[in-house]
Length: 216
Ligand code: CTP
Image (cartoon, rainbow, N blue to C red):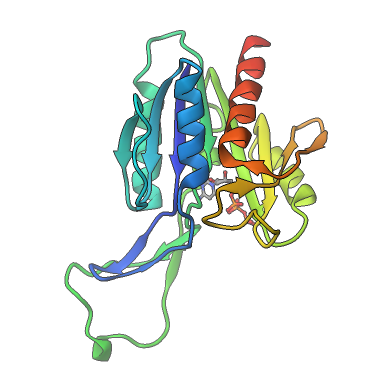
């Protein structure tokens, strides 16, 4: 199968030296890319600004903003032989908002008012809701128990699965090598997994995608 995996944060620039972003390091997405490649799949890894080594055998596309990420995901899904099933795994912490304007030169503080006008970014998973032959898996990083929000996001975005986690939980935050996650499917089933390495979580996500694809 063809896996398109997103990882890391996006950056939404206000000018060349200022941006809105978040602390995602990309570890979970890089682990999914590695696990999918190890299972014999073609993998395109769409990475926001992160400092991780590209897993062997994986095609990497570096992006900055949410809009760049959407374009790269579309291109990654389109670049597959007709009839090949694709799997989209959105681990990226995509910024929901961006500054309404981006200056081409550094803004001087005297030119800034202290208020920042924001506009919504596209929701990548929702935009690709009707993509044919694509298994779609999302993440829900929450502060607190993720179960209810994971179910909501799974249904709202029409996903095959949402992987929820509590970023304030021990061993589960941004930048950790481990994660304690919950797998939520659209039928409302909620499966709690024990604390394990991000690579072990990644292998289970790949196995889920393989099972889902084989059931058509
Ligand atoms: N996502 C996306 N495009 C966005 C924002 C999020 O595709 N613009 C994806 C994320 O990669 C993740 C899932 O949607 O797989 C859930 O992201 P999250 O930020 O938790 O949810 P939101 O839809 O932004 O909801 P909220 O801000 O209400 O928590």
